[in-house]
Length: 200
Image 1 (cartoon, one colour):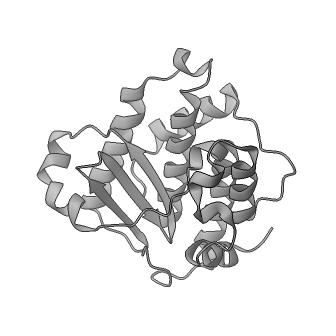
Image 2: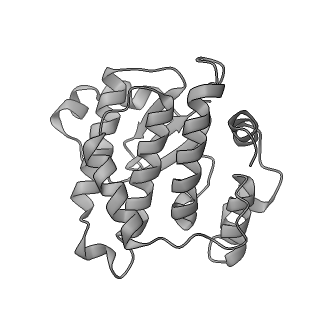
Image 3: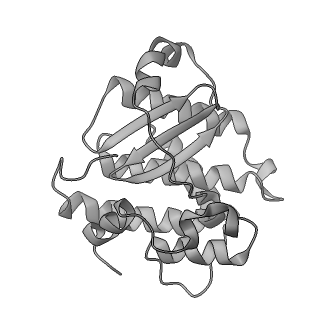
């Protein structure tokens, strides 16, 4: 596996494959393959998203809702993305509810707006009803985030840091992205100097 610096550089540079043309692959196996290649994932087949993986993600989201640095923010975003994909599985509705996921996304955005940290930014597109997060060039997005009272108080901040979405639908590779983010975050803690990579 490549170092996290190489992976983040790959992320920041424009993709050279069809991934950037998201609509071309959106309903095909190719899209998942292209995404995994883009992220530097070497597995021959996508990792299956299992109930056990979702349960672990739930426990981690509940136990660590407030990241204190960019690697932990990346971990939390990957966990929330995995849960957002898991709830759409036949077994997902029995262990998850959208309010749980979306309220934790709103909690994360409120925390990041109140406690800015290097290489992490977020943006709320109120008109499109989408929350965007970016960690060292790595983007994750969520739709239909509840506007809690603390988030409403910070709405100007949330709408100020405009981000351009890179068009990558991470729910298609939620399990691989979850495992990848855990590994890359661990490397980020040791390899990436604070402030070296920006969000945009």
